[in-house]
Image (cartoon, rainbow over all chains, first blue to last red; front, side):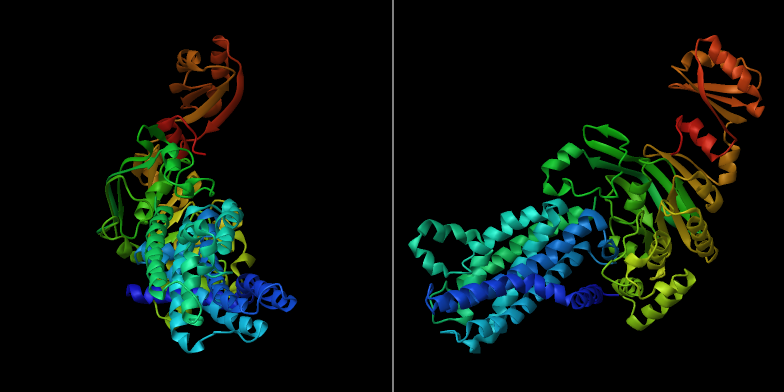
Length: 257
Length: 342
């Protein structure tokens, strides 16, 4: 028995559950981005309220939002219930591996679900918005790397949330944390656009979504203005490490007494 | 024969609730974590003392019971032995391994049946077992065969592919036992396994446990049901307020219960004054006051009742209730703590 084989078994369990719940998973994670694409990437340009070029700024941001929602929710929602009432995770806490590995597996599994959501939303977005100026698909491998890194940031954040709040606070969490994070995450507008409002330009830098969206711009639409890719990636690595450290501490505290 | 479990000076003090609140949002209103006793034993400035120097020794192959009221420290003890609660001080060994030094290896050797069934609700009954086996490194094909055998043995084969929500309370508890057995552990822990089960399901469970014991498994069970401990366990540890009061076979424990029938007379006021006249009653060997309760041990069973009523009246008290308990684990427990078990 090696920790690696147990880790693999934990991942297989999550894959089995995810496959079974695929329809609801897809609805949960892609509904919001797709509705946004329809309104801002299709209807408004047709009406002439926004310039046609807006879709180029919107697309990478929408992908970032998709992976954010998916990875945060797939870690935080079940964990809040597990620690709150059902205690279902106990069967995994009995596994003969360090308890932290159980938490890390949850982050890995959440990050993979974020990647999956991004991969589903990209073609849908392209389909609805039509041709997108500046879209540079040869960078697919780079975009995938950014997606994986961004999903890790938010799966780790999901671990922090999942171990820090109680089931009754979950609605509040979405209103207070997730909703502002999405709106001020430079997903629906490029960070450089905030040059017009300097207070916001620097204020939003505490928001992890900013770096994911900007890195996605660097990968998908490199010819358009965006934050230097290495800066965004370094920020994502640092935030992953921070959230993971806090989340692991919370996980151990909730599992042991 | 070697020890399956050995504890020495085991002590657990939980941080005081008010202190916990400042440590983060997590302890607020998130539903009761089942491992913290809900009837705190003793509070000091350092926190809640759940376990106060516990020394236990359980032999391999033994069916061992931890008997005590809610909040006695039973669940904390099980929590420490199953590596989920960190002891404040002292030492605990399970299957020859230290629970604090080698928790992962201890978990490999134990099976745990929780107080409340907590199956993985996203999986079917069979998947619960197969995946749990996989968490213990058992290859898929072998796990599946073993799972099918266990479901048959515990009589839930017809629910193998059902979602666990479709299982009754008794069936879920049996699934928990199957899950605890799937990796062939040396020691099985059951925490109040029959709470909430109907009498039939409870007796079915007893049969399963007897069968496991007959196959040489070490079983450690907590319960606050006297009869259950008496019927099943080879040795019983009576715990209360985090301390071990007695530990022996049910027969010897019962034999050490104070002589005669316990007559509990409830009065309409403090019972203290009634002790002296009660001791004068023929056949009464011992009498104690516990609040409004007068506990008299009578060698002649219920014969002493009329005289005890008179004794109470002689000090101006009126009898509101009378209860008889034959010499049993229950009367032993009451004589040791002055309280009933449940």
